[in-house]
Image (cartoon, rainbow, N blue to C red; front, side, top):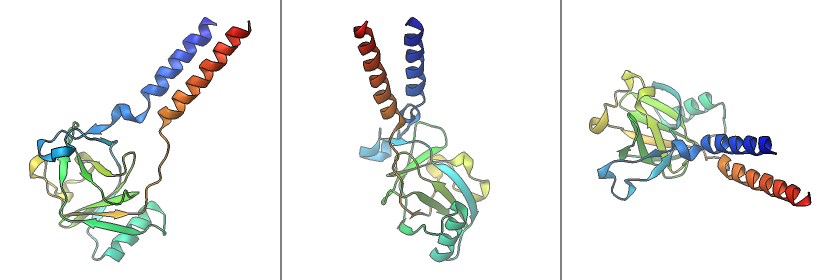
Amino acid sequence: MKQITHKLIISALLILGLSSPAWSVVIVDSSAGIHNGTVVGLIDTFLAEDAKKGSDTEELAWVNAIIGSPGTTYNYKTEPVSYYKTDMIDVFAFQLVTEPGYYVIKKAKRVALFANKDAYGWGVFDLSFLSDDMNLGSGGDMEISHVTEFGQSVTVSEPATFAILGLGLIGLGLSRRRNAK
């Protein structure tokens, strides 16, 4: 019985330790006003960087070619972009309008595509993923020309919710088993 209890405790700690909120990014920028201290989720997945596209149609075709989904739609364009420093080095966050599945950051002659994940109302990107050609600058000197949002996000239930539910059910089963003896 002690072995089962120890295994359950170890499993619970591993599951809770691997859940996403433990590594969430937080805005730590005094210029962010009410957003200072906001948890903005995980760093979004960098997918590609390329030369700036000549039109919205060309940009949409580029996005669809990268993500392999010809059905992705153009959602919204933000210009200018207010971005904020976070508690991680070279990681910045900005608010999104349509909670998209993907977004493109633009500057001068380059574009970078990201898959949005976790907190869909925020774009969270790491400058170190981008090439020097992107030329965003750094820190307070950084400049993003604009952001274009594509497609809709797909909400997936948080793993920790299922872990807690599973642990509760296991606990009920063990207590019932103990009471039956």
